[in-house]
Image (cartoon, rainbow, N blue to C red; front, side, top):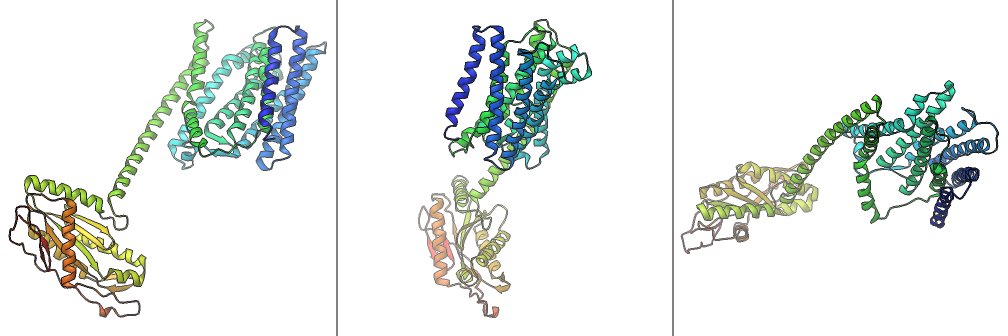
Length: 551
Protein backbone atom coordinates (compact mmCIF):
# COMPACT_ATOMS: atom_id res chain seq x y z
CA UNK A 1 0.00 0.00 0.00
CA UNK A 2 2.88 2.37 0.73
CA UNK A 3 4.18 1.96 -2.81
CA UNK A 4 0.77 2.58 -4.41
CA UNK A 5 -0.38 5.34 -2.06
CA UNK A 6 0.65 8.26 -4.35
CA UNK A 7 -1.30 6.72 -7.24
CA UNK A 8 -4.30 6.09 -4.99
CA UNK A 9 -4.20 9.68 -3.76
CA UNK A 10 -4.15 10.97 -7.32
CA UNK A 11 -7.16 8.81 -8.23
CA UNK A 12 -9.13 10.07 -5.22
CA UNK A 13 -8.33 13.68 -6.12
CA UNK A 14 -9.44 13.11 -9.70
CA UNK A 15 -12.65 11.49 -8.47
CA UNK A 16 -13.55 14.41 -6.20
CA UNK A 17 -12.67 17.03 -8.83
CA UNK A 18 -14.67 15.16 -11.48
CA UNK A 19 -17.77 14.95 -9.27
CA UNK A 20 -17.61 18.64 -8.38
CA UNK A 21 -17.01 19.57 -12.02
CA UNK A 22 -20.08 17.62 -13.13
CA UNK A 23 -22.26 19.06 -10.36
CA UNK A 24 -21.11 22.59 -11.04
CA UNK A 25 -21.28 22.43 -14.82
CA UNK A 26 -25.05 22.87 -15.00
CA UNK A 27 -25.42 20.21 -17.71
CA UNK A 28 -27.43 17.94 -15.41
CA UNK A 29 -31.03 18.40 -14.50
CA UNK A 30 -31.87 19.10 -10.87
CA UNK A 31 -33.01 15.50 -10.34
CA UNK A 32 -29.91 14.06 -12.02
CA UNK A 33 -27.64 16.36 -10.01
CA UNK A 34 -29.25 15.15 -6.77
CA UNK A 35 -28.72 11.52 -7.78
CA UNK A 36 -25.07 12.10 -8.75
CA UNK A 37 -24.53 14.02 -5.51
CA UNK A 38 -26.06 11.31 -3.33
CA UNK A 39 -24.24 8.48 -5.12
CA UNK A 40 -20.91 10.29 -4.83
CA UNK A 41 -21.43 10.77 -1.09
CA UNK A 42 -22.37 7.12 -0.65
CA UNK A 43 -19.25 6.03 -2.55
CA UNK A 44 -17.02 8.28 -0.42
CA UNK A 45 -18.59 7.10 2.85
CA UNK A 46 -18.35 3.44 1.86
CA UNK A 47 -14.74 3.88 0.78
CA UNK A 48 -13.86 5.48 4.13
CA UNK A 49 -15.51 2.65 6.06
CA UNK A 50 -13.83 -0.09 4.02
CA UNK A 51 -10.42 1.62 4.17
CA UNK A 52 -10.56 2.06 7.96
CA UNK A 53 -11.60 -1.50 8.69
CA UNK A 54 -9.33 -3.04 6.05
CA UNK A 55 -6.21 -1.25 7.25
CA UNK A 56 -7.11 -1.96 10.90
CA UNK A 57 -6.58 -5.67 10.16
CA UNK A 58 -2.87 -5.04 9.54
CA UNK A 59 -2.19 -2.82 12.55
CA UNK A 60 -2.04 -3.24 16.31
CA UNK A 61 -2.72 -1.22 19.44
CA UNK A 62 -3.87 2.36 19.14
CA UNK A 63 -3.31 2.32 15.37
CA UNK A 64 -5.96 -0.39 15.03
CA UNK A 65 -8.27 1.19 17.60
CA UNK A 66 -8.59 4.64 16.05
CA UNK A 67 -9.19 3.12 12.60
CA UNK A 68 -11.84 0.78 13.99
CA UNK A 69 -13.63 3.61 15.80
CA UNK A 70 -13.49 5.86 12.78
CA UNK A 71 -14.78 3.01 10.61
CA UNK A 72 -17.82 2.72 12.89
CA UNK A 73 -18.39 6.45 12.59
CA UNK A 74 -18.17 6.51 8.79
CA UNK A 75 -20.36 3.39 8.58
CA UNK A 76 -23.06 5.15 10.58
CA UNK A 77 -22.66 8.30 8.48
CA UNK A 78 -22.97 6.25 5.26
CA UNK A 79 -26.10 4.52 6.57
CA UNK A 80 -27.60 7.88 7.43
CA UNK A 81 -26.69 9.12 3.96
CA UNK A 82 -28.47 6.13 2.44
CA UNK A 83 -31.65 6.96 4.38
CA UNK A 84 -31.32 10.62 3.40
CA UNK A 85 -30.80 9.78 -0.28
CA UNK A 86 -33.80 7.43 -0.30
CA UNK A 87 -36.16 10.02 1.11
CA UNK A 88 -34.73 12.81 -1.03
CA UNK A 89 -34.77 10.86 -4.29
CA UNK A 90 -37.42 8.14 -4.17
CA UNK A 91 -39.82 8.72 -1.26
CA UNK A 92 -42.96 10.74 -1.75
CA UNK A 93 -42.91 12.10 1.80
CA UNK A 94 -40.45 14.59 3.32
CA UNK A 95 -37.77 13.34 5.68
CA UNK A 96 -38.95 13.75 9.28
CA UNK A 97 -36.75 15.37 11.91
CA UNK A 98 -35.37 13.71 13.89
CA UNK A 99 -35.01 10.58 11.79
CA UNK A 100 -32.82 7.55 11.33
CA UNK A 101 -30.69 9.66 9.00
CA UNK A 102 -29.88 12.00 11.92
CA UNK A 103 -28.90 9.02 14.05
CA UNK A 104 -26.53 7.86 11.33
CA UNK A 105 -25.03 11.30 10.69
CA UNK A 106 -24.45 11.96 14.41
CA UNK A 107 -22.75 8.57 14.73
CA UNK A 108 -19.69 10.03 13.00
CA UNK A 109 -18.80 12.68 15.64
CA UNK A 110 -19.68 10.25 18.44
CA UNK A 111 -17.01 7.79 17.24
CA UNK A 112 -14.66 10.34 15.64
CA UNK A 113 -14.07 12.09 18.98
CA UNK A 114 -12.58 9.04 20.78
CA UNK A 115 -10.80 8.09 17.56
CA UNK A 116 -9.01 11.45 17.59
CA UNK A 117 -8.07 11.04 21.25
CA UNK A 118 -6.64 7.58 20.56
CA UNK A 119 -4.92 8.99 17.48
CA UNK A 120 -3.18 11.52 19.73
CA UNK A 121 -1.64 8.72 21.82
CA UNK A 122 0.79 8.04 18.99
CA UNK A 123 1.82 11.69 18.97
CA UNK A 124 5.26 13.03 19.56
CA UNK A 125 5.64 16.35 21.40
CA UNK A 126 6.10 19.34 19.17
CA UNK A 127 9.47 20.99 19.60
CA UNK A 128 9.31 23.94 21.95
CA UNK A 129 5.64 23.37 22.94
CA UNK A 130 4.90 20.10 24.68
CA UNK A 131 8.59 19.67 25.47
CA UNK A 132 8.35 22.73 27.66
CA UNK A 133 4.94 21.75 29.03
CA UNK A 134 6.40 18.45 30.21
CA UNK A 135 8.38 20.45 32.74
CA UNK A 136 5.03 21.45 34.22
CA UNK A 137 5.71 25.19 34.33
CA UNK A 138 2.71 27.35 35.12
CA UNK A 139 3.45 29.70 32.23
CA UNK A 140 3.47 26.91 29.66
CA UNK A 141 0.23 25.43 30.96
CA UNK A 142 -1.33 28.89 30.91
CA UNK A 143 -0.35 29.38 27.25
CA UNK A 144 -1.83 26.02 26.27
CA UNK A 145 -5.09 26.77 28.10
CA UNK A 146 -5.31 30.27 26.63
CA UNK A 147 -4.65 28.98 23.11
CA UNK A 148 -7.38 26.40 23.53
CA UNK A 149 -9.84 29.00 24.82
CA UNK A 150 -9.04 31.43 22.00
CA UNK A 151 -9.40 28.78 19.29
CA UNK A 152 -12.58 27.36 20.80
CA UNK A 153 -14.12 30.79 21.36
CA UNK A 154 -13.26 31.99 17.86
CA UNK A 155 -14.71 28.91 16.19
CA UNK A 156 -17.77 29.09 18.42
CA UNK A 157 -18.40 32.66 17.28
CA UNK A 158 -18.06 31.58 13.65
CA UNK A 159 -20.44 28.69 14.25
CA UNK A 160 -22.87 30.95 16.07
CA UNK A 161 -22.77 33.58 13.34
CA UNK A 162 -23.30 31.04 10.56
CA UNK A 163 -25.34 28.07 11.75
CA UNK A 164 -25.81 27.72 15.49
CA UNK A 165 -27.26 31.19 16.06
CA UNK A 166 -29.73 30.79 13.22
CA UNK A 167 -30.77 27.35 14.47
CA UNK A 168 -31.32 28.60 18.01
CA UNK A 169 -33.21 31.68 16.79
CA UNK A 170 -35.49 29.77 14.45
CA UNK A 171 -36.30 27.15 17.03
CA UNK A 172 -37.95 23.82 16.17
CA UNK A 173 -41.46 22.41 16.42
CA UNK A 174 -40.36 19.75 18.95
CA UNK A 175 -37.70 19.50 21.60
CA UNK A 176 -36.02 16.45 19.96
CA UNK A 177 -35.96 18.34 16.68
CA UNK A 178 -34.32 21.33 18.36
CA UNK A 179 -31.74 19.10 20.07
CA UNK A 180 -30.85 17.44 16.78
CA UNK A 181 -30.62 20.79 15.00
CA UNK A 182 -28.25 22.16 17.65
CA UNK A 183 -26.25 18.91 17.85
CA UNK A 184 -24.90 19.26 14.31
CA UNK A 185 -23.06 22.60 14.70
CA UNK A 186 -21.96 21.80 18.25
CA UNK A 187 -20.41 18.44 17.33
CA UNK A 188 -18.84 20.00 14.25
CA UNK A 189 -17.31 22.70 16.46
CA UNK A 190 -15.89 20.14 18.89
CA UNK A 191 -14.29 18.07 16.11
CA UNK A 192 -12.74 21.10 14.40
CA UNK A 193 -11.33 22.41 17.69
CA UNK A 194 -9.77 19.04 18.53
CA UNK A 195 -8.25 18.73 15.06
CA UNK A 196 -6.73 22.22 15.23
CA UNK A 197 -5.35 21.74 18.74
CA UNK A 198 -4.01 18.30 17.83
CA UNK A 199 -2.28 19.69 14.75
CA UNK A 200 -0.87 22.64 16.70
CA UNK A 201 0.33 21.02 19.90
CA UNK A 202 1.12 17.49 18.76
CA UNK A 203 2.97 15.91 15.91
CA UNK A 204 0.83 12.81 15.56
CA UNK A 205 2.14 9.50 14.17
CA UNK A 206 2.82 11.10 10.78
CA UNK A 207 2.00 14.65 9.72
CA UNK A 208 0.53 13.43 6.39
CA UNK A 209 -1.99 11.19 8.13
CA UNK A 210 -3.03 13.97 10.49
CA UNK A 211 -3.36 16.40 7.59
CA UNK A 212 -5.64 14.03 5.68
CA UNK A 213 -7.76 13.06 8.67
CA UNK A 214 -8.11 16.62 9.93
CA UNK A 215 -8.93 17.96 6.47
CA UNK A 216 -11.60 15.29 6.00
CA UNK A 217 -13.33 16.03 9.30
CA UNK A 218 -13.15 19.79 8.76
CA UNK A 219 -14.58 19.43 5.23
CA UNK A 220 -17.53 17.46 6.62
CA UNK A 221 -18.05 20.05 9.37
CA UNK A 222 -17.99 22.98 6.94
CA UNK A 223 -20.62 21.45 4.64
CA UNK A 224 -22.65 20.43 7.70
CA UNK A 225 -22.63 24.00 9.03
CA UNK A 226 -23.60 25.43 5.63
CA UNK A 227 -26.48 22.99 5.39
CA UNK A 228 -27.71 23.80 8.92
CA UNK A 229 -27.53 27.53 8.21
CA UNK A 230 -29.47 27.25 4.94
CA UNK A 231 -32.14 25.07 6.52
CA UNK A 232 -32.57 27.37 9.53
CA UNK A 233 -32.73 30.45 7.32
CA UNK A 234 -35.49 28.92 5.20
CA UNK A 235 -33.53 28.35 1.98
CA UNK A 236 -35.60 26.24 -0.46
CA UNK A 237 -32.65 24.14 -1.65
CA UNK A 238 -28.89 23.67 -1.31
CA UNK A 239 -26.49 24.07 -4.18
CA UNK A 240 -24.82 20.69 -4.84
CA UNK A 241 -21.41 22.39 -4.71
CA UNK A 242 -22.03 23.10 -1.01
CA UNK A 243 -21.99 19.30 -0.60
CA UNK A 244 -18.31 19.25 -1.61
CA UNK A 245 -17.33 18.52 1.99
CA UNK A 246 -19.66 15.52 2.08
CA UNK A 247 -17.91 14.11 -1.00
CA UNK A 248 -14.30 15.07 -0.24
CA UNK A 249 -14.41 14.58 3.56
CA UNK A 250 -14.95 10.80 3.65
CA UNK A 251 -12.53 10.36 0.73
CA UNK A 252 -9.81 12.15 2.73
CA UNK A 253 -10.59 10.01 5.77
CA UNK A 254 -10.11 6.91 3.60
CA UNK A 255 -6.69 8.19 2.50
CA UNK A 256 -5.77 8.94 6.14
CA UNK A 257 -6.54 5.35 7.10
CA UNK A 258 -4.37 4.04 4.27
CA UNK A 259 -1.54 6.59 4.59
CA UNK A 260 1.86 5.07 5.41
CA UNK A 261 3.96 6.09 8.38
CA UNK A 262 6.20 8.99 7.45
CA UNK A 263 9.64 9.06 9.07
CA UNK A 264 11.46 12.34 8.84
CA UNK A 265 15.01 12.32 7.60
CA UNK A 266 17.65 14.40 9.30
CA UNK A 267 17.36 17.06 6.61
CA UNK A 268 13.55 17.19 6.75
CA UNK A 269 13.21 17.51 10.51
CA UNK A 270 14.63 21.04 11.02
CA UNK A 271 12.56 22.38 8.14
CA UNK A 272 9.44 20.70 9.49
CA UNK A 273 10.12 21.96 13.01
CA UNK A 274 10.35 25.53 11.74
CA UNK A 275 7.02 25.14 9.95
CA UNK A 276 5.41 23.74 13.11
CA UNK A 277 6.82 26.60 15.19
CA UNK A 278 5.33 29.15 12.79
CA UNK A 279 2.01 27.30 12.80
CA UNK A 280 1.90 27.40 16.60
CA UNK A 281 2.82 31.09 16.58
CA UNK A 282 -0.13 31.90 14.31
CA UNK A 283 -2.50 29.39 15.90
CA UNK A 284 -4.79 31.50 18.10
CA UNK A 285 -4.77 34.53 15.84
CA UNK A 286 -6.09 33.02 12.60
CA UNK A 287 -9.44 31.83 14.03
CA UNK A 288 -9.71 35.09 15.95
CA UNK A 289 -9.17 37.16 12.82
CA UNK A 290 -11.77 35.07 10.99
CA UNK A 291 -14.31 35.55 13.78
CA UNK A 292 -13.62 39.27 14.13
CA UNK A 293 -13.60 39.75 10.35
CA UNK A 294 -16.88 37.90 9.89
CA UNK A 295 -18.52 39.94 12.65
CA UNK A 296 -17.22 43.17 11.13
CA UNK A 297 -18.46 42.27 7.64
CA UNK A 298 -21.91 41.45 9.02
CA UNK A 299 -22.04 44.81 10.75
CA UNK A 300 -20.86 46.73 7.67
CA UNK A 301 -23.36 44.96 5.41
CA UNK A 302 -26.16 45.88 7.76
CA UNK A 303 -26.91 42.40 9.03
CA UNK A 304 -25.86 43.47 12.48
CA UNK A 305 -24.22 41.46 15.25
CA UNK A 306 -26.05 40.30 18.33
CA UNK A 307 -24.81 40.94 21.84
CA UNK A 308 -23.23 37.49 22.11
CA UNK A 309 -21.01 38.11 19.09
CA UNK A 310 -19.90 41.57 20.29
CA UNK A 311 -19.15 40.39 23.83
CA UNK A 312 -17.47 37.26 22.47
CA UNK A 313 -15.09 39.22 20.24
CA UNK A 314 -14.22 41.54 23.15
CA UNK A 315 -13.49 38.62 25.48
CA UNK A 316 -11.35 36.96 22.82
CA UNK A 317 -9.20 40.06 22.48
CA UNK A 318 -8.82 40.15 26.27
CA UNK A 319 -7.61 36.54 26.17
CA UNK A 320 -5.12 37.41 23.42
CA UNK A 321 -3.74 40.30 25.51
CA UNK A 322 -3.35 37.99 28.50
CA UNK A 323 -1.65 35.41 26.31
CA UNK A 324 0.79 38.02 25.03
CA UNK A 325 1.62 39.08 28.59
CA UNK A 326 2.29 35.46 29.54
CA UNK A 327 4.41 35.06 26.41
CA UNK A 328 6.41 38.21 27.25
CA UNK A 329 7.07 36.89 30.74
CA UNK A 330 8.09 33.53 29.30
CA UNK A 331 10.42 35.24 26.81
CA UNK A 332 11.96 37.33 29.60
CA UNK A 333 12.65 34.17 31.60
CA UNK A 334 14.06 32.52 28.50
CA UNK A 335 16.39 35.47 27.85
CA UNK A 336 17.52 35.30 31.46
CA UNK A 337 18.35 31.63 31.02
CA UNK A 338 20.19 32.40 27.77
CA UNK A 339 22.26 35.08 29.49
CA UNK A 340 23.01 32.71 32.34
CA UNK A 341 24.02 30.00 29.87
CA UNK A 342 26.26 32.47 28.03
CA UNK A 343 27.90 33.42 31.32
CA UNK A 344 28.42 29.75 32.14
CA UNK A 345 29.95 29.14 28.71
CA UNK A 346 32.22 32.16 29.10
CA UNK A 347 33.31 30.88 32.52
CA UNK A 348 33.93 27.39 31.13
CA UNK A 349 35.96 28.84 28.26
CA UNK A 350 38.23 30.76 30.63
CA UNK A 351 38.49 28.41 33.62
CA UNK A 352 39.90 24.99 34.29
CA UNK A 353 37.04 22.46 34.59
CA UNK A 354 38.76 20.39 37.28
CA UNK A 355 39.87 23.05 39.76
CA UNK A 356 37.78 26.07 38.77
CA UNK A 357 40.94 28.17 38.51
CA UNK A 358 41.67 30.44 35.57
CA UNK A 359 43.06 28.62 32.55
CA UNK A 360 45.96 29.60 30.32
CA UNK A 361 43.75 31.74 28.05
CA UNK A 362 42.43 33.89 30.90
CA UNK A 363 45.90 34.16 32.40
CA UNK A 364 47.27 35.47 29.09
CA UNK A 365 44.47 38.04 28.92
CA UNK A 366 45.14 39.33 32.43
CA UNK A 367 48.89 39.22 31.92
CA UNK A 368 48.55 41.29 28.75
CA UNK A 369 46.34 43.79 30.58
CA UNK A 370 48.83 44.04 33.45
CA UNK A 371 51.71 44.55 30.99
CA UNK A 372 49.75 47.30 29.22
CA UNK A 373 48.99 49.02 32.54
CA UNK A 374 52.62 48.66 33.58
CA UNK A 375 53.72 50.27 30.31
CA UNK A 376 51.39 53.24 30.87
CA UNK A 377 51.61 53.77 34.65
CA UNK A 378 54.72 51.77 35.64
CA UNK A 379 52.54 49.76 37.99
CA UNK A 380 54.64 46.67 38.83
CA UNK A 381 53.41 43.13 39.22
CA UNK A 382 54.85 39.69 39.75
CA UNK A 383 54.30 36.29 38.20
CA UNK A 384 54.80 32.98 40.01
CA UNK A 385 55.21 29.65 38.23
CA UNK A 386 54.61 26.57 40.39
CA UNK A 387 55.27 22.91 39.62
CA UNK A 388 54.25 20.28 42.16
CA UNK A 389 56.89 17.82 43.34
CA UNK A 390 55.72 14.28 43.92
CA UNK A 391 52.37 14.60 42.17
CA UNK A 392 53.20 11.93 39.56
CA UNK A 393 53.86 9.41 42.32
CA UNK A 394 50.42 10.13 43.81
CA UNK A 395 48.78 9.75 40.41
CA UNK A 396 50.59 6.50 39.62
CA UNK A 397 50.12 4.97 43.06
CA UNK A 398 46.54 5.90 43.92
CA UNK A 399 45.03 6.53 40.48
CA UNK A 400 43.79 9.50 38.52
CA UNK A 401 40.78 10.09 40.79
CA UNK A 402 43.07 10.61 43.77
CA UNK A 403 45.31 12.83 41.64
CA UNK A 404 42.35 14.96 40.59
CA UNK A 405 41.23 15.29 44.21
CA UNK A 406 44.76 16.37 45.17
CA UNK A 407 44.81 19.02 42.43
CA UNK A 408 41.51 20.41 43.71
CA UNK A 409 42.91 20.59 47.24
CA UNK A 410 46.03 22.35 45.96
CA UNK A 411 43.84 24.85 44.10
CA UNK A 412 41.89 25.60 47.28
CA UNK A 413 45.10 26.28 49.20
CA UNK A 414 46.45 28.50 46.45
CA UNK A 415 43.29 30.61 46.62
CA UNK A 416 43.88 31.07 50.34
CA UNK A 417 47.39 32.40 49.69
CA UNK A 418 46.46 35.27 47.36
CA UNK A 419 44.35 38.40 47.50
CA UNK A 420 41.14 39.09 45.61
CA UNK A 421 42.97 41.11 42.94
CA UNK A 422 45.45 38.31 42.20
CA UNK A 423 44.86 35.56 39.63
CA UNK A 424 45.55 31.88 40.24
CA UNK A 425 45.65 29.74 37.08
CA UNK A 426 46.18 26.10 36.28
CA UNK A 427 48.35 25.79 33.19
CA UNK A 428 47.92 22.04 32.79
CA UNK A 429 48.93 18.87 34.60
CA UNK A 430 50.45 19.85 37.94
CA UNK A 431 51.63 23.32 36.86
CA UNK A 432 50.10 26.52 38.24
CA UNK A 433 50.73 30.23 37.89
CA UNK A 434 49.89 33.19 40.13
CA UNK A 435 49.64 36.76 38.83
CA UNK A 436 50.32 39.06 41.79
CA UNK A 437 49.00 42.60 41.32
CA UNK A 438 51.14 44.65 43.69
CA UNK A 439 53.10 47.88 43.96
CA UNK A 440 55.95 46.18 45.83
CA UNK A 441 58.11 43.44 44.44
CA UNK A 442 58.46 41.94 47.88
CA UNK A 443 54.77 41.05 47.84
CA UNK A 444 55.31 38.53 45.03
CA UNK A 445 58.02 36.84 47.05
CA UNK A 446 55.84 36.81 50.16
CA UNK A 447 53.03 35.20 48.19
CA UNK A 448 55.52 32.61 46.94
CA UNK A 449 56.53 31.86 50.51
CA UNK A 450 52.92 31.43 51.57
CA UNK A 451 52.33 29.10 48.62
CA UNK A 452 55.22 26.79 49.52
CA UNK A 453 54.26 26.88 53.18
CA UNK A 454 50.70 25.89 52.27
CA UNK A 455 52.00 22.94 50.27
CA UNK A 456 54.00 21.71 53.27
CA UNK A 457 50.81 21.03 55.20
CA UNK A 458 49.76 17.38 54.77
CA UNK A 459 47.08 16.47 52.24
CA UNK A 460 44.51 13.71 52.64
CA UNK A 461 45.08 11.23 49.80
CA UNK A 462 42.78 8.20 49.87
CA UNK A 463 42.49 8.42 53.66
CA UNK A 464 46.25 8.79 54.18
CA UNK A 465 48.18 11.88 55.18
CA UNK A 466 50.75 12.91 52.58
CA UNK A 467 52.96 15.89 52.03
CA UNK A 468 54.03 17.15 48.63
CA UNK A 469 56.38 19.91 47.67
CA UNK A 470 56.64 22.49 44.96
CA UNK A 471 59.23 24.18 42.78
CA UNK A 472 58.58 27.89 42.36
CA UNK A 473 59.85 30.49 39.92
CA UNK A 474 59.18 34.21 40.38
CA UNK A 475 59.56 37.00 37.81
CA UNK A 476 58.73 40.69 37.77
CA UNK A 477 57.69 42.69 34.74
CA UNK A 478 60.23 45.29 33.53
CA UNK A 479 59.13 48.83 34.28
CA UNK A 480 58.88 49.82 30.61
CA UNK A 481 56.53 46.88 29.93
CA UNK A 482 58.40 45.92 26.75
CA UNK A 483 57.63 42.23 26.99
CA UNK A 484 54.82 39.93 25.91
CA UNK A 485 52.67 37.73 28.11
CA UNK A 486 54.06 34.59 26.48
CA UNK A 487 57.64 35.73 27.05
CA UNK A 488 57.01 36.65 30.67
CA UNK A 489 55.39 33.29 31.35
CA UNK A 490 58.32 31.58 29.64
CA UNK A 491 60.75 33.40 31.95
CA UNK A 492 58.73 32.26 34.95
CA UNK A 493 58.85 28.70 33.62
CA UNK A 494 62.63 28.94 33.21
CA UNK A 495 62.91 30.25 36.76
CA UNK A 496 60.84 27.37 38.08
CA UNK A 497 62.85 24.82 36.11
CA UNK A 498 66.11 26.28 37.40
CA UNK A 499 64.78 26.14 40.94
CA UNK A 500 63.74 22.51 40.48
CA UNK A 501 67.15 21.55 39.11
CA UNK A 502 69.23 23.40 41.65
CA UNK A 503 67.16 23.03 44.79
CA UNK A 504 65.82 19.52 43.99
CA UNK A 505 62.71 20.09 46.08
CA UNK A 506 60.85 16.78 46.21
CA UNK A 507 58.19 15.15 48.31
CA UNK A 508 58.08 11.39 48.54
CA UNK A 509 54.48 10.07 48.69
CA UNK A 510 54.23 6.70 50.44
CA UNK A 511 52.44 3.85 48.79
CA UNK A 512 49.31 2.25 50.16
CA UNK A 513 51.32 -0.11 52.41
CA UNK A 514 53.96 2.39 53.52
CA UNK A 515 53.93 4.57 56.59
CA UNK A 516 53.31 8.26 56.17
CA UNK A 517 56.20 8.91 58.53
CA UNK A 518 58.53 8.46 55.56
CA UNK A 519 57.24 11.67 53.99
CA UNK A 520 59.78 14.34 53.06
CA UNK A 521 59.11 18.02 53.74
CA UNK A 522 60.34 20.59 51.23
CA UNK A 523 62.39 23.50 52.40
CA UNK A 524 60.77 26.93 52.44
CA UNK A 525 61.40 29.33 49.64
CA UNK A 526 64.40 31.55 50.06
CA UNK A 527 64.18 35.32 50.05
CA UNK A 528 64.36 36.59 46.49
CA UNK A 529 66.66 39.45 45.65
CA UNK A 530 66.74 41.82 42.74
CA UNK A 531 69.80 41.75 40.46
CA UNK A 532 71.57 44.82 39.32
CA UNK A 533 70.46 46.71 36.22
CA UNK A 534 72.28 45.44 33.14
CA UNK A 535 70.21 46.66 30.18
CA UNK A 536 67.54 49.08 29.06
CA UNK A 537 64.99 46.34 28.39
CA UNK A 538 65.61 44.17 31.39
CA UNK A 539 68.05 41.43 32.21
CA UNK A 540 67.25 37.89 33.18
CA UNK A 541 69.34 36.55 36.04
CA UNK A 542 68.97 32.93 37.06
CA UNK A 543 69.17 32.33 40.80
CA UNK A 544 68.55 29.36 43.06
CA UNK A 545 65.17 30.77 43.96
CA UNK A 546 63.92 32.34 40.75
CA UNK A 547 64.34 34.98 38.10
CA UNK A 548 63.85 38.71 38.46
CA UNK A 549 63.34 41.02 35.48
CA UNK A 550 64.26 44.64 36.06
CA UNK A 551 65.22 47.84 34.31
